[in-house]
Image (cartoon, rainbow, N blue to C red):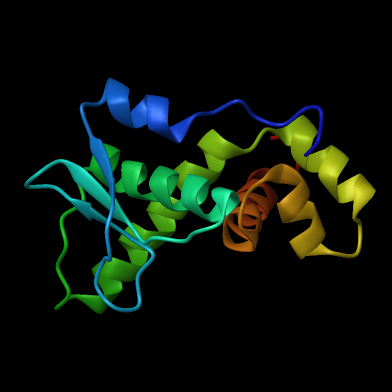
Length: 138
């Protein structure tokens, strides 16, 4: 882990919002699920720490955004997922930490993500969002 890693704690964030985190099997094909009715995040058993950290942040983003599940609308669902990834990435990553990790592992996104204790998906989302804004410092 980089010495400049973000100290964002998804468990503390969830507690501050009155959201429970429960390890239980979510629906097939998902690692976690936000249940707006019970204000609970279900996470799959056996996740790596960095996976768990990222999926909880992602599901918290759904909660903050007021997202509700609507499987019938693929376009809206895709937009919700992207928005949740972007918000979670912003909580989990800091520009200086990303720069350091990319300097340590310039040719390996998986290694940089591991260094930052996030998933490749979250790091890729963060890089995409910052490229739209003009680079790593934005």
